[in-house]
Picture 1 (cartoon, rainbow, N blue to C red):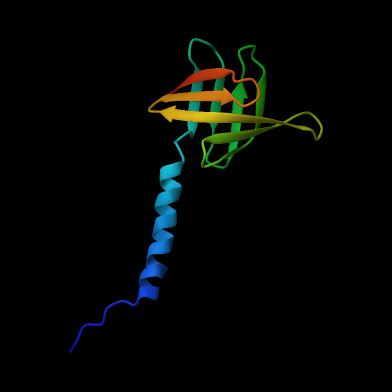
Picture 2 (picture 1 turned 30 degrees about the vertical axis):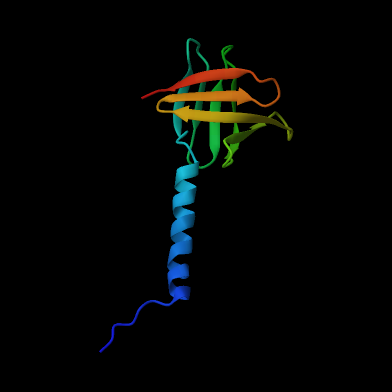
Length: 116
C-alpha cells in the first residue's frame, strides 16, 4: 500500500502558524525586568502584562502602559493625575544586559543595566 503524502494545503496550514511563532519570538528583545540607569539612580521596570514603573533621578515615580513595536520602537503611556496621559515615543536597543533608550523627540540617549 502506498503511503499518502501531505497535500500542499496541509503543509501550509502547519507552516503558517510556525512561521508566525518564530517571527514574533525573534523580533522582540527581552526588556522584562528591572533596569537601572548607568551612573544614576533612575530605574525602570517592565512587566509581562504591558505595564511599567519608573523612578527618575529626582525620585519622582510614574507608571503606565507600554507597547513594543517590531521596528524597535517603544511607546510609553504615563497616566497623569486625572484622566490625562503623557505619551513618550522611544527607540529601544537591548544588547545582553544593556538597554539603550533614545527619545524620538529630543534624541536624548539613556543607558540602563539589568538588575539581577
